[in-house]
Length: 510
Image 1 (cartoon, rainbow, N blue to C red):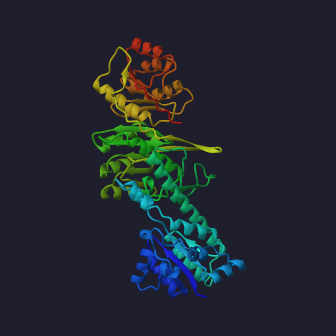
Image 2 (image 1 turned 90 degrees about the vertical axis):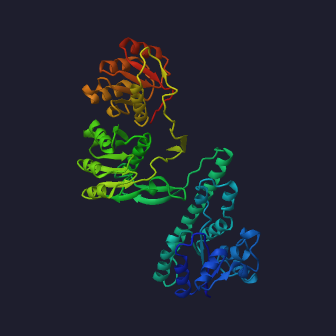
Image 3 (image 1 turned 90 degrees about the horizontal axis):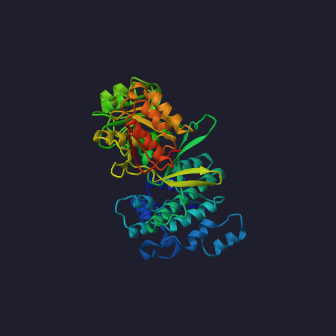
């Protein structure tokens, strides 16, 4: 008997040539619905409309097309069960050998600005998921293709196996299909939950993007997944050159992206090492910003990840190329800069036009579950800050305090950041006590700490860090406040003649 294929797709990429091969090379007959049938017919490919095959018209403006026993019976029938075959014969149902279905573009629709709830609802596919799930369930007896990228693989299977399809291939496509429908339903559930302000069920769906060489260490397998059907974030970045991105590269790039988005109005550069900024600076030009960030800690900058918030020009590229860097990301890169980078074959250079948009939630997996929190995207201004010391900050000091505070937000806690002239000069990260972080930052700053600003991501439990900072020449401190011993820290600051500002906001980063 001639083989029977059901084709009903929203994304028609590669469809025409695939269908032509099915008919002309492998002797398939095709049944199809709606726009898919019209597209095939327009190209001269023989096709039977679903309505002709089932004897039931499409109704409700196309909402009901394939929900019919002649469709689902042909999909779900087990060929190894005589009673199933008898049902097919009695009801004149043809067994379906191949189901090719992809779904209405729901995720793409809701990503458009201003889309209405009614528009989103109309992009919820009903017949498609039903056919996909039925086909995937019965993979022992047919093949389901939910991804146009698999068309050539299917044709290769038929060619290699004398017109047959291996059970391994069918099962793999069934798994892919269930993952596809799960992601589709998750997108719908997430959208509707957002409409009603409901967040009792947190769902994540992701599709494999590529395997990575390894994870944090060579013995840890790793892969990169894309969340959502529409590429966003790093999946939209253009890789201009360099070696394949590693797990650690991507983790550090995300840290770099988060910190560089704090600065929009002025050229800025940050250099990330082991997920912490070792140098961050502003400048009148991008070159000045990068050079200042590099000079903040040139030792740690070796092998670092660089992010800048302006297109990279030739002068900046020349400066960057003087040291070994793992990755560079910018909104754009001029042709002259790209030519300079091309001499560094292993340097990974990426452009990401939208550096500002990130995830709204942070997720951490723990044994038996996961933790979800909203991203730390508090808008930082000095308006709500409280000056708690007798000495008041100047306007320039306030701006420096704000810069230091924005950087400190992105340093692993306990975090101490010392800055001067809108550039970091000392960073103490991830120590088990705040005094230890302060000592590291002050030691790194050296003699440059005189007249500098210090930021602390959490409050001072004692006045010891205040006294250590003052001894190093620090003139102003910004911290959240909220300690039972705040008065001790304030008294020490007043005694030592330095400014202290409370933000009322804490920025732990574990």
